[in-house]
Length: 192
Image 1 (cartoon, rainbow, N blue to C red):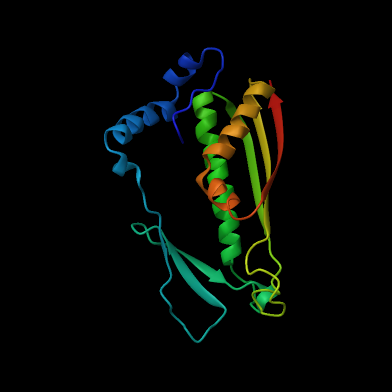
Image 2 (spheres, rainbow, N blue to C red):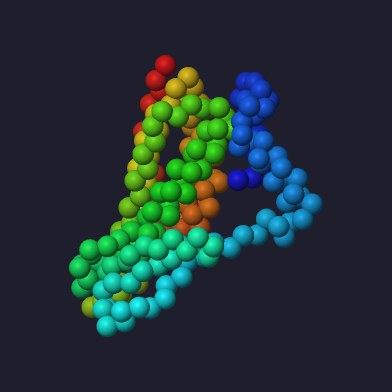
């Protein structure tokens, strides 16, 4: 997330107690001294096992932790959909990145979150991938996020800045929206 100032009252006192702001200060200094250190590489790897089964595989997430996830093929393209499919992982990436970004910005703004729920969906016409209709593109045609944010001791203006900041700073959101439209429906509630 870029080092951006959010114009709120007592912003400085909020940031002094924000662990996210403290860590970002260290990273900002590091990246300003050496911009190449800001480059990261995320990874996933599939090593084909049980190649006789066209409907299931597994993917290992992160090159150090190698956390395995079983992957299935969606029933819309002939699979059993007995495990998450790659489209589900795309939605999981968008939802988890968006929610993590909300948490980071909330901490910097000292917004006390009570509950968050981010649901990401992706729509695709599979006739293209099945080569039934070559005029149908082989891609997700749209994605959507439903976001519920319940917070305490804040105001509508600050929550609007939170959502706009999350849209600007969420890497997966910004990457995907360059290729396909993403709609966002946000419900925010304030409990005092």
